[in-house]
Picture (cartoon, rainbow, N blue to C red):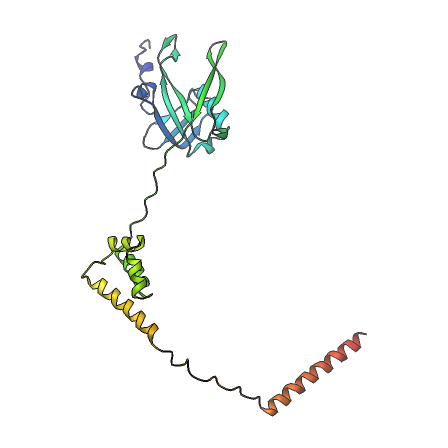
Length: 245
């Protein structure tokens, strides 16, 4: 076979330098497989794509220098990749994928190392730290039942407390997500609970004015039996100690 066309077609299962002509690509690694002896022994899956990133030997050395040799530790980390048009193959500038930035850099500082540029020559190569912006976690939406439950607990503290709670952030959320609106049955129920709580607290304690019950003396026969049991126990202890002596 003398046709070179088949060997210059980019592999469709991996990202290639031409995929980055439009700009850098930041990837978050989800899995890494290593197959020693292959032309491209490292394959990295990443979020948002069915393709993989297969680093060249130089970029694999960069990752080992920054992250260590254990590829399982790479999962969850991110790379910013760019197209370097000066990469040569067969003496021609064909372009290649290079790493511009990495998360989890040692001391979060730039790292420079010497990489092979051409046969017999090495050049310094610098990678910068990558800061990935993490989207804030959205709070779970409060359900109507949750809102009503929280509002009832607030109403049980009385009218004044419920009125103050009504305009707190929690109260506003309960009004937003729950069935608590002016004229609603739920609000009427809450107001009834708050008024009832105040009324309960205003009621006098029926036991407050009662005299405490006088102490009940112990029955004489019971007391005598208790004393006899105590004396018997002490005598048994003395006999045991005498026997041990």
